[in-house]
Amino acid sequence: MTPQIAKRILLFLHERVSSLEDPRSIGEALKDSSLGDFWKYRVGDYRLISSIEDGALRILVVKIGNRREVYR
Image 1: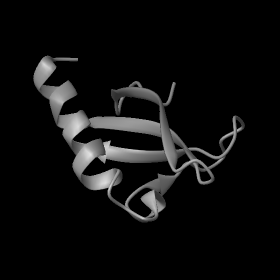
Image 2: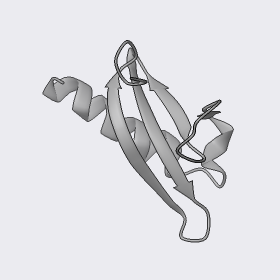
Image 3: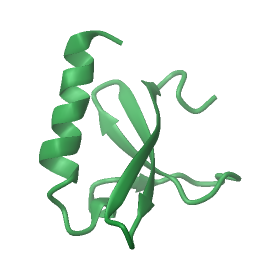
Image 4: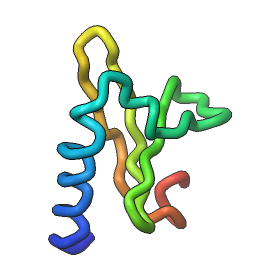
């Protein structure tokens, strides 16, 4: 991942996701996930796979990758 893409992802998380009362409103639930309740966010060709912890108001980004590779 290039530094420009990393910066774009950080800006997305800071400006778009962290300010929301419900971060699920702009994400999409992953279907058929055997690992638990995960959400994805789209940033260009990259996907952020996340776990949202409501009680702590925390979003844990589990994986970041190109959309061709991130779900493998």
